[in-house]
Amino acid sequence: MSRLDQNTLKKIRLTFKETGNIRETARRLGISRNAVRRELRRRPGDSASSSPIRRASKLDPYKAKIKYLVIQKDLSAVRVQEEIQELGYEGGYSILKDFIKTIRPHNRRGATAPIEHAPGHEAQMDWSPHRVDLGGRETIVHTGSIILCFSRLLYLNFFLDETIDSVISLHEEAFKAIDGVPATITYDNMTTVGKHIGPKEVWLNPIFSAFAKKYGFEIIILPPGAKDRHGMVERPFHYIEHNCLKGREFNDLEQLQNHGQWWLEKRANVRIHGSLRERPLDRFGRERSFLNPLPSKRFEAYRQVERLVHRDFCLSLETNRYSVHPKFVGRQAKVRLFRDYLQIWIDEVLVASHTYVEGRHQRQVLPEHEAAFKGSCFQTELLKNAFIRLGKEAGTYFEGLKRMKGKAAGYHLQRILKLAQRHGSDVVAGALSHTQRYGVYSAEAVSRVIHGKALRQKGNVQTVEDIPENIRQWLRSCAVEEQNLSTYDEMLEESNDDEDNEEK
Image 1 (cartoon, rainbow, N blue to C red):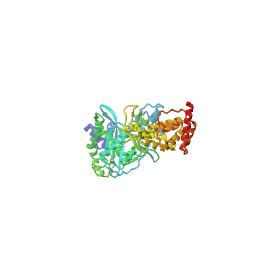
Image 2: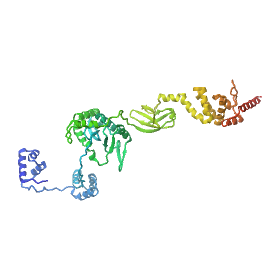
Image 3: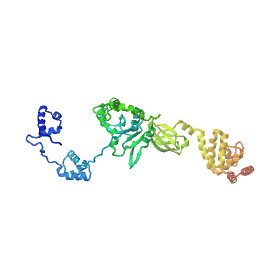
Image 4: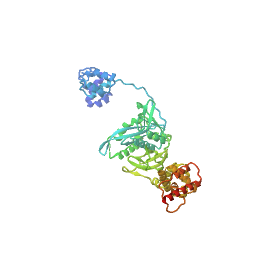
């Protein structure tokens, strides 16, 4: 602080007597208002260089302790206050904070050269909360801002949160407004975009990363502490608060958002920028052609979960069930949850799309899935998979059965599988092999062979509850080796003779 000469000190009193105002006195004399105040407070006769009498401070007994806590322990002012209050300090926080400012070491920042940005190369994005009167109530809104570094063209909008949906919506609106996409966009650490998780190691939110890939820009996550690198988007938030929002009231969020777009168009982007000495809109005219074009289709954000397709050919999601084709029963599916609908993917192939079901514990089955379940083709496919496990003869028998019986093949397959459960797959496989030699394809024919009845016998035939052991053994052998047809005829005759003797 430079000392004023005696002549200036006399002029202060004379000028103040004339103006009666400290501000006007300081302006006329070209000195600070504090210098005027000091002179007016000095009693006549006191030396101008004499220091005022210093009053004792409540901090005085604790200053040594405060210096130790600040310099050696690097504690904050709040923590220092807690420590010295335990020692009996009864003073306030403000006086303590002001004293700490005078003793805390300051890291001098070195000189930095301004960063030159090529047209269309970089934009910066950030959030800032603001208190706004919405419908008569003070509400915290989140101001999302994107600024083009070359032209300083600003885009902003207001949201009630900072979720991934809001982040993507802000970018899409900004890209549409400027009709293009910058090559890179820088961000502070935020989980909706990405963050540093280690030295030179950056994690990117997979949804936002897919969005950036769709629009063709590079994501740059700035390391913590690089505030100077992100100043272009952070500094305008003060301008936004005091010029766009302060002293205004809005009926609702929609009115606030409309006002924000009007303010950008009529105020922010057409003012003379303090650093560039140009209007951002004029510089944007030179930058526009350097932006990348917009993609043909907009990006749709989604959340992905994995689910199992259950026996009712549906998967469960938040108590509701959604169908796929019945052939996917038992498979793992990836479900992509969009805002208004969901997609079901299996083996990287889209197999079904559903709108969300209203309510809980509902089951939504698409018509084509219901038809596939009820249709003979699918039922036959399921039966075929079980049927061909009976043996190598079952595959060719299935083809003959399908050829001879057509849509009724499923009925015969079901009956033959029940025979296999009752009598054993080896016995049924032998019966299949034998009936196939005769060119007869039906469940009744297989049953008659198993029970030792003639294939061509018509009419009411007595049912045999127990299969003769010789026929059972022979049927087992039919499944693995060729047999003479006469052998079967002989066995049938023997079986029929035994039945006739029992009747007598």
